[in-house]
Length: 303
View 1 (tube, rainbow, N blue to C red):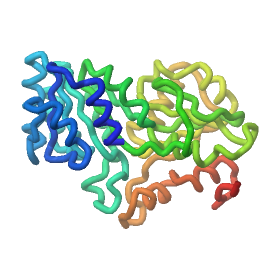
View 2 (cartoon, rainbow, N blue to C red; view 1 turned 45 degrees about the vertical axis):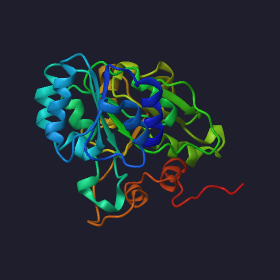
View 3 (cartoon, rainbow, N blue to C red; view 1 turned 45 degrees about the horizontal axis):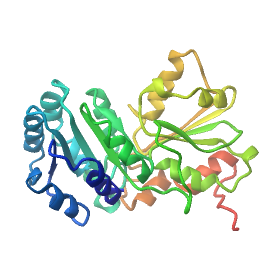
View 4 (cartoon, one colour; view 1 turned 90 degrees about the vertical axis):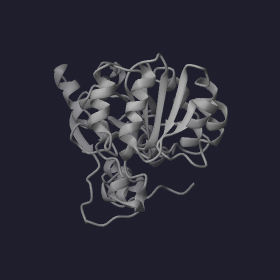
């Protein structure tokens, strides 16, 4: 998704009032952005706390600022500066965390971001988790306050188009309840269930924002008396499942059954690829399909 992000930056943000800071990252993705932005592109080095302070100063001079790093270095290392320098002044700075969840795989937990959305939500930062490459232009048009943009991988079924961006989108219709999937996991659920009959699968919703005011009435109708499955490559605490449960409770509503599949950390104490960690959490395609059908270790039918 980072290449699509770079393309969207060039198309929509290459103006004199935009500034781009990177924490010595973005190689093989941001070279064209650097060339286009010229003096408005600065490699701040491995100094994330200082980079946030610089971003705050630029924003106070009426500039709109993008801060780019891999996800844990973007939100965890400079947390105090985000809280004090950006959030207290509600400054228009967008923190771009590349590789949310287990995306950096074998590099281990220091490079994983499993609680990033919760940490940023706690500060009142707007959290955006695009599911597909196509979402990025619409999201870059909304950066008027402290924002955290979590980048992953677009993993929709090959050749499939997606609807225009919305905080909640139904990407696969179904009749057996609904799946609410945070960001790119929606594409994985779509892949896993696309070949099931519509009467034998839940609908799949791509959820890209946490504001419960955005929950569509169609989604609420689908879970009335039927299962609700929440999938997220993020810990349970402060994640989509917890926020969605709170939103439903505030409305006096409940699903027929609530099934939550969050990131579980490192249950075996071993580290591996993103696919390895997803499988351990029941967030791989086979586990998602088994969750819905009730049959374990079921793989997709071959066409």
